Image (cartoon, rainbow over all chains, first blue to last red; front, top):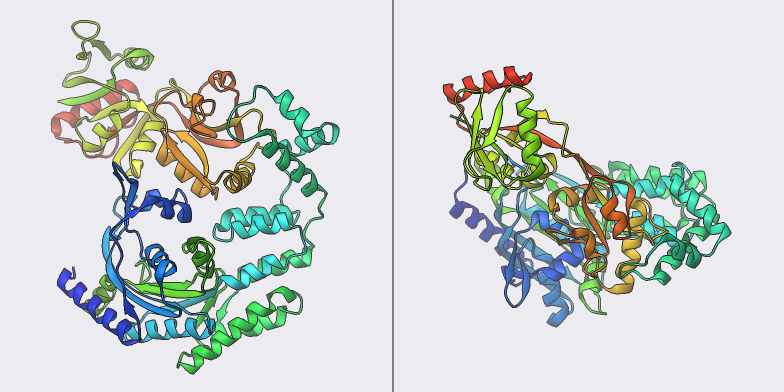
Length: 366
Length: 234
């Protein structure tokens, strides 16, 4: 067991390294209003965060991460560009017995808000983390959610289907179910087929009227509007088999980054929509190579970050330790989040966190 | 002394008494009808503890009772990793109830979780808040919806008359137990075709955290013999 002072000393070392890299120190409240966190993470966050109640402010949460308060603070009164470093406790409720994960631990983070050269900023963050974690024998894994998003946006299908897929990029199971259905691989549920049959003979309004007493806040117009959309969707052709196959192939791409780039260059003519995202990937690899990262060996997984990092929409990375330890460090690009929290304004942003208790544990074991 | 926790009132208590009675273990309330004290006959070294069905999972987890009868829905909702905390000894074949997700009947476009998820996304865009699902089974419902990849919903707590929350405007959908579906229909709701979260019934559990000294063990062995069940490996 590593002592708290040893962990704090390691956190101080990392924090100093981030400061030395040009970051301004920032802090955030321990007790955060639950609203923004619930809006971002959904109901799942209740299982992971400690929720408490303030008689005046309503639901509050013990800080589950720094991203939301740091982005909010930056969007409210930050300089442009800006680099931030922070260090402090985060709290994660553990919902399983015997789970050895910490309920309360220090995080040290580094975030870059910069419009100028996003790929250079991606590489700057990754190289800085790499340098701070040198000698620990960690396995870095990278990914790029932006390529997946571009591939979905480029599908030859309706905007409604694309929106449904984009919404679930971070929920692989539902994404897969939707893709199977849009590609004609999964049969239509029988109730849907029966509804379409009824909609062919009657208006949605008449069917709603016949269904029984109206109840609830969701209006008849909303119900009818979705019913009409279902009729339209049924008329849309399934995704072309080669296009669907390319997307399935892309989702499972795992290779060293340089080889992954060659593969993506190979399929880009068949999926022209991913070309700009692949160009960004190529620029990022050059920027990483310029900072001494061996991109011929760096692991790339196209689906990395899809199940655990819901707001990342570009470059993602983790530094993995041995066994079942959580990632020692992780981060990525979250441009869209700044728009969500920025009330109309947005700025490209990339960053990540290191868990000093895991660094100290590995150092202690070495 | 082997402590057996049994629901303290109503049909669940009567049926539990019948179930044990049919196997040679007579349980009864001692004293006045409304007094929560009980007795066990036909089994040496056992003590009856009458408790609210909702508190039995907690008492089992704490090991304050050795055995307990309650709904499997309550054990699974209230106990983290329930199977690591209790042994399931026998399903008693009564108290059947399905935990399901239900939506207004007039939602002609919603029959599956896939529909619910799509409706939730559209609802949030129109109303500015996530689609509310009223329930008292927070853990079970959240774990189910997370596993199914449903988003843009929120759970609102409802400890009773849950089916009425849609009409009263505090929720858009409900997740609650139903046995016949009558209450759902009376409140103009219908179940989703793939929204069955758990099929619950009255179940006999043993607490892993209880003090299983020689006396309690011997009583459990004798009881298991009468009930025709395999005792857990203590």
